[in-house]
Length: 122
Image 1 (cartoon, one colour):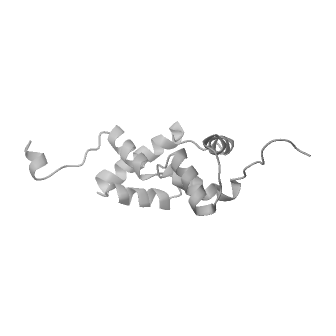
Image 2: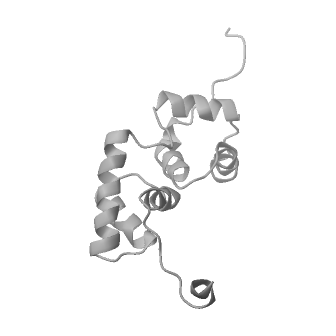
Image 3: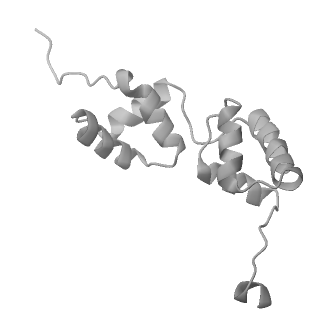
């Protein structure tokens, strides 16, 4: 008879977990989500181990990030889209990307939104 704890398998929830992770949820929030939604009790270490096994990280590979940055420039300047619209377009093109990543990449490119009213007068 095997000794030790029973292994926790979160593989059936991979797609949802990865999607939530890319939306910006922390491992702790993912753990709570698993418990509340699927009644699966997993430790943070278990979740991190599975994400490592799946090769899922928050950072985009450099080549992909560069392509997405160029695409964000086009969508921001030439098309005039807001961050949430850029996010929809990128997801429609098959990119797994979260709203905070779009904002971070836009700011890294120096693409600032104009502010009107009191903020612009300062």
